[in-house]
Length: 477
Image (cartoon, rainbow, N blue to C red; front, side, top):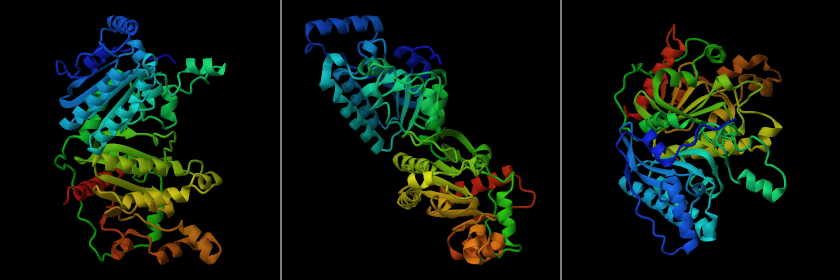
């Protein structure tokens, strides 16, 4: 696959930032400590690239929102990072932290500058330290990986973003393929270090052309920076405590299992705005049975993680990787100081050798532990099926809601019937006995609010009602 055009640093600044908004933060580079031969090489690099170093920094606006911008110039010694460039990056990040600005970084580099050796190499630590201080302040860090991004740049500031995307066809890898082949006497496997492969494997969030960066930054900062806005959706009167079910709970279980039932995608489609999907754990794992997004639910910014019933089947059950994605969402919410919304809707977690060896039980435990220890506001919704430990993993928020047909059980009712009666035929009886329904959960205090489902509800109308209730709870209503 061919790469998109190679943007220079100045072209990228002009493309992404609003016109005439860029203000450089770069002080002149001091070359006095370098040998004469290297100074001459730097001078030639500057003449060729049109920049004084391999990185430019400053501030500007993207669709009116202030950002700090750090951008590599590959034309300057292959975008390599020496001591001066590293100092420039760390200084810019710390200035952004002091001024309360998000940082947008765009990389294109072969890594550490070999002419400056180990002293340049260890500067990646200082850049990382500055970025962690920035993130500890609750400020966003967005990363755009351009062709090529390798070595120490990718293994430090290129891999620390809250959101990380790469341009189409970009070579992104720890060790450049030419170096690998020279060291090992054989070529690196083709296609592994392509942006598209990394996105498919859950290492990065998406493949995004540079031309679409302003829209992506706008969506991300619309959630991460903008304050809540006024609600627009109509909130239904929650089910009153003490209300009893006027039909068998088995009817509700069958309804939540039916095709066409509302799902987490409907919540985003009909009740959200400025949604930016995040895919994978960013550690090389991806499971689409869980959906993670930065979004605004009826005007309330949040991180949402939801079990996607449309992606769960006998062939594609919710595996431990899905819960690792959920934990990434929990950590993002904490770092970005955003409310966290979890959506429970699963027929159950994967039961297999792979799931056992992938630490399914441990991931359920870690999700529960992560959710109950968040310092940010948390709301969970039992949207439909709440089956087993996989459901429990996303349940224990400070505020737990359910739709009136939602349910929660330790096993599928058929499984409970097998354990107690020896066969699955008494599943409906077991569901009633175990009090799995939303109204029973409300009576026991395990659910704090129930959104009524109305006759004639569609996925759209119910999704809007659920989002309205979630947003009201997030807004303290």
